[in-house]
Amino acid sequence: MNEFFPGVPRISYEGPSTKNSFAFRHYQPGEKVEGKTMHEHLRFAAAYWHVMRNPLSDPFGPGTALMPWDDGSNSVANAKQRVRVFFEFLEKTGIDFYCFHDRDVAPEMDSLAESNRALDEVVHVLAAEQERAGKKLLWGTACLFSHPRYAQGAATSPSLPVFAHAAAQVKKAIEVTHRLGGGGYVFWGGREGYSTLWNTDMKRELDHLAAFLHMAVAWKKEIGFTGRFFIEPKPREPSTHQYDSDAAACLNFLREYGLLDEFALNIETNHATLAGHTMRHELTVAANAGKLGSIDANRGDELIGWDTDQFPTNLYVAVDVMLVVLGMGGLQPGGLNFDAKRRRESHTPEDLFHAHIGGMDTFARALKIAAALRADGRIADFVKARYATWDAELGQKVERGRATLADLEKLALSQPAPNLPSGGQEYLENIVNDFL
Ligand code: XLS
Ligand code: NI
Ligand code: NI
Image (cartoon, rainbow, N blue to C red; front, top):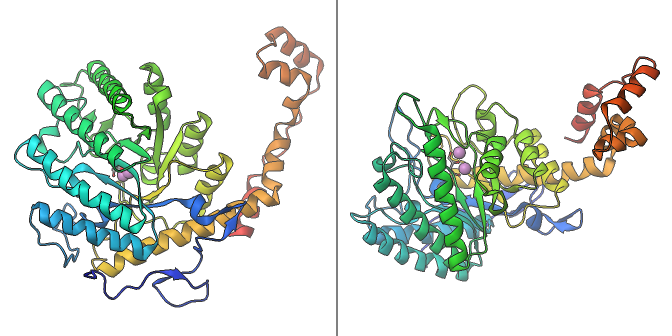
């Protein structure tokens, strides 16, 4: 068989002292942490749209990515060739999951029927490659944001014919995700938002979005797809206002429209920071609701206000992520999807490997650090002690909803001024730094 990355070996663990850039320094798939292997904890996935389809263009210039395997055409043959390249990439990196949009894997043709046929042909190759290489689909999705028909929204379009096209695309994408044994299906509302209320009926658009998702749930059940549905929050870009702006907004929307039982959230680091939150905040909001489903692991740039989708090399943030993930007992059936692209300057195929190796090593370290912090226990003990006054009788009465304002007044009148211990932020941050 043809090799598409002839200069790159299968990446294996060589330990922290290696100088080999095509080796892991920290990710050792079989190493056990808190009783499970790194491989079981981390569930890494590669994003088809970034690895295979991102030319690395920006608003000021065209793509720079070198893709010697791609003939640049919109043909199904070229699409099939890319699948083989992608699976060689998965095999060499040891990444066992992947995610795709319908239009990343197969071309959009002149009619929906032809596009569906093209998708079926490529899915056939995806299924064969999954089987051959032992890889799995983490989640599938439909691209409802690139084509000009979606410029004013898809499930929130003012036009019913556009809404119908989006519905047909989602129906098909759920079907192929099911056929490929996908663990989940993602709804990222790329164009579901608006730029001005002068032309927008917000209430009607939200009602339409909910109707759309209810139909998707019904279809999922109809065809027996048991994977999980995820909504991926993002506050802006491309729309000025996106309806699924952050985890709390998504949870409220799902609750308001009776969809909460059917969805979990896919939280992305760069989207959290665009929303003015830390990643840990977004993950915690989702996890508190029992709704943290999966993670798009990337990072933004503090100096650039958009979704730069950089690889997750910030160890501190990765530790935050792994603390939440360990705290909820694991991400399954979700995973850590590298929704990340190389910088425009990093245009060689080798850069694809360096980028993913870096993300995997960062999360391997973060997993070990998070487990060590949990084993150490000082931070958890501190937080527990901070709320100790709630553990006595009156606190328990309040927490169980059995107290009255009069009960609390009695305490307030009888007690001396409350004695607040230190919040200890610096003490705690110093402990964290000791483990990095
Ligand atoms: C874009 C989103 C997108 C979703 C899938 O910002 O992150 O890539 O993950 O549609
Ligand atoms: Ni994403
Ligand atoms: Ni994103």
